[in-house]
Amino acid sequence: MPTPAELRRQRRGPGPRPSEPPNVELPFGRKNYILFGLAALVILVGYVALSKGSITLAPILLLTGYLVLIPWGILAK
Image 1 (cartoon, rainbow, N blue to C red):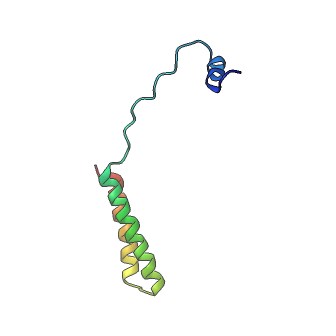
Image 2 (image 1 turned 180 degrees about the vertical axis):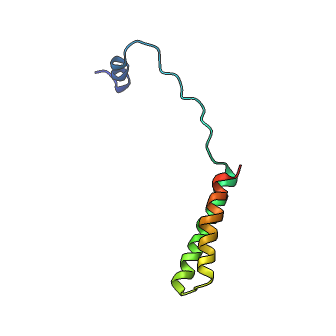
Image 3 (image 1 turned 45 degrees about the horizontal axis):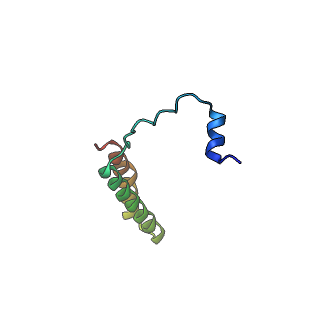
């Protein structure tokens, strides 16, 4: 009984093997992910402050997270 690898080879045919996929670079680096994490933390703290009834601190934190840190994390090189 043929092994699964042999069955795949038979289905694929005797042609050349497919080439390896090109080395793709990740779109974001370490700095970007640190900024995304910081943004998530600031947004989380903003929602916690909002649930506690803070009408000054919560909007500042949420706007900072959404309008400053996330775009900065996307655009930073």
